[in-house]
Length: 560
Image (cartoon, rainbow, N blue to C red):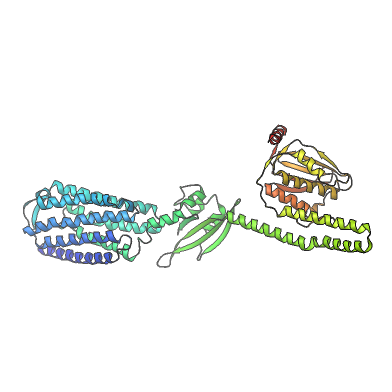
């Protein structure tokens, strides 16, 4: 039996030397996260192991009792160091102020005072025994059991803090944290067996030295706290992009706040990808694909656009263990791209008109002016006037198209009133306007006037002599129809294109302006056949109001 205790003493000495070396190593790297409380914990273990070894080697003497009281210095330092380590590891540094340190010092101070002044409150000695680790039969007192309860409480709180982060951190970190929890639980399990079971020696100092080694490796060698769950969580949750982590079995193991908002739910973690993304087939099809390298794709969901980046995840043995999916919404970017593309198209069309369409009447005007100077014939001045008028029309229509594509000044406008006003601006050539509506529309009056002017002008130019034009409205919009020659069905899709015209006098911009104004309001313009066989321009998606609402709105505007 004596040889067993001597062997155990040497194990304690070796453990003490080992953790002392770890303490110095940790202190040299005290700038790293968690290294300072770790070095304090290791110093406590060194004291604990050293005093325990001295007590075993001097067993049966009064020195053994002295060292058995001295080892409480190492115990209280170890327990407090573990608690501070857990607070720092789990991101609760705000609790590590002077108040916390003062509270942590109360129990150790009282315990050590009792051990020095009234050790009988810790335990009483009933006699010698060669079967006991200290060579003495001792009976634990109330202060001892109070200290045990306090120490177990601190260890339990430390373990709970780490366990909470194990549950809230990703699958990759969770296994590591569980390993640390197991390393913490082992020595205290051994201690419980020593206190409450029939075990000859207290293995707690040695097993706790193994815990110190595990923590040292995690903090100082593996860089565990450099990329700790708290940092990982804060970074991931702060991303605007949705983050999804999928394991090797196709389960969704981690989702950040942006991802939960995108899926409209919290209960998606640990679900199969096919179920988690059931309401989003395009993303589901992308997520279920096994990829060996990074891939990137764009998907749309209604009127929203997303950039999806899939990255395979590999472990240290280069085995694929899952994949990471980043989903970034790019709707605003797409909208800006379309706006920029639209503006570029407008510039191209403007350049085309300036370089070609304006040049023709300009050449005619120049030639007519030269002939007028030579001959003095009035017909050349008439031709010059027509060319100048065409250039003025082209410039006006191009300026309309060049204006912004959004409407900021909307009002409730009487459709009949603005139709009559627009008709007065058009050279009617014997045509007739029939207003068959008492509704009002919500829009920009100036742009609506421009739309109707172009609609009427187009109907007069292409409908033939004496054409009758009718404007009507319903709940979905308003319509301009004529009884003229109409537009062939094959050309109806092309009439809104810039430059499309079937008349030598046309600019090819009239109907393009109509579509431009409609799109600026969020309306939709189409050309069909009218009931009389002519052309029917339909402007749909318009907010219209009935007679009473229309008159009230018009009266209100007139008072203002």
